[in-house]
Picture 1 (spheres, rainbow, N blue to C red):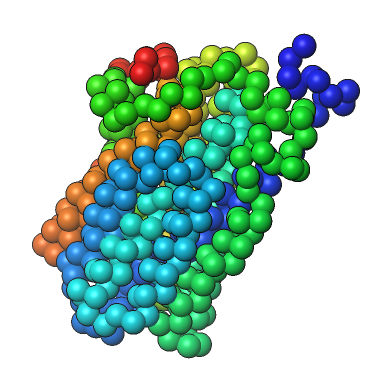
Picture 2 (tube, helix red, strand yellow):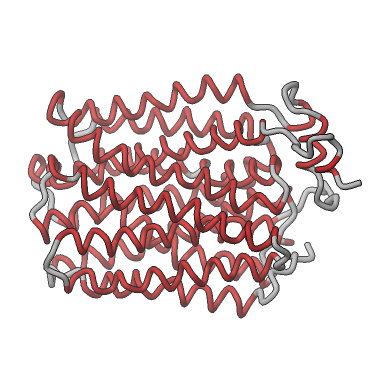
Length: 423
């Protein structure tokens, strides 16, 4: 009898969704902390006299640290586990977020961004690894979509809260208040999380459901056995091309709307609320679509890639955003692209656990995150160069609109069946 039918009601229990909720709030906090600097960017440029190049140089250091941290975080988490590893990451990045309040120079802010990137690099490897430990394959894309929706909630909360804090108490308190939220989350994590086999609140039926996939070896997998595989190259290149676009949105959208439509910090709330509400719908919807197709009998390969193709097509209209005259038309185009990115991301993250065993998932997600950070470093440097010389975002949005179809073509060429890598 299948594991999910061992209980008379057929319901395996729901505590795994409590764990998913913790991942959701951690991701929300992560995106609040990283968004603060972008929301304040127009004001900080005035206060400190920065150019566009100065600004992109500062946020560049977040990506440097994120790239290094993602490379190390996966292996770190695979060795010490998600419970302690996630706690350390949250404590570190919360402190780094608050440290911004003590800075006053380009070098100082660059250091604070570097430390924040180093700490936040643990969030996604830890979350994806936790999903692999707590959910069967048929639910992983949905669970990933749910926790990944926290990135959009964070991006919604920040434009609403940060301007109010800035106007009421100044820019320093925007960093202090948002950074302190992570310490509250840490208390709940330490109280609620254990491994499934050791958790007193997990029913035998739910544990059987979580472990209903075929058993996998627990052998430790060294780096050299992961790197040569086509699946590794496919995942890393897809992350390089598309993670960089999302991070570019986070850094540059406030400046784009400020420059193009004359929005100031007090007016960011409604447009960004709509953009990231749409992104939330896309995150959960994209994860739901592939999970729904797989439950209906589609293969994992067909379900994941169909959902990703839908998302990649929905990104394309963002190339028109610099050609429209109405602000709300631009908001809807960017919102559709943000929704499509998040649906894409929920499925792309899940391909790591589709193609690699659980004990290697943290490392793979770390490799992908590093690739995304390297891509973001490149597009940030390109952005500074283009804006200083032309003041136009047209080429940048052309890149943003085409990256996903290119990434899907590469993923399908290198992993046509999403078959597990023989590591």
